[in-house]
Length: 180
Image (cartoon, rainbow, N blue to C red; front, side, top):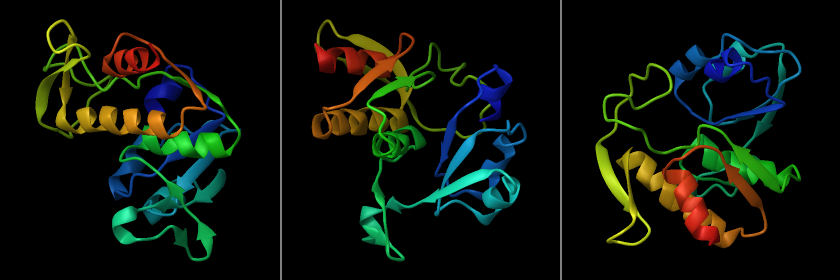
């Protein structure tokens, strides 16, 4: 959140669903006018940090917990990451053409794996996309490779929305090949 705001991006909406209490460290720069779509699974500290902001509560359907309805309110079928969770939320709000910046799921080198300092670490791997012989190789993590697979599944089940993924990345290649 703060990284994007410092780059001059002023979001209309911002989606958050990470339940970890330390996620609040990314919310010091909260521009007025942003609608914060915060999942009920987020830590109370997130709601405290955004107090006084325009907050909208939503619920994630967590299949392993069996909660398609949460306290009488419908829940969204979501993916394992915030980007994948933002897709059904955006579609429900009526958006049919989604633009993604920084939805790479890959990086140029194993040493430089994030746009800003990131202490979390996941197993780093190389994957080939497309043709097994001539397909492009991307440096990624096991988590991000899973995100790419979930994204492909979402596109198969919900083909009615358009996507533009900016940049040359694993996700952009997945989208390009999926629409070819």
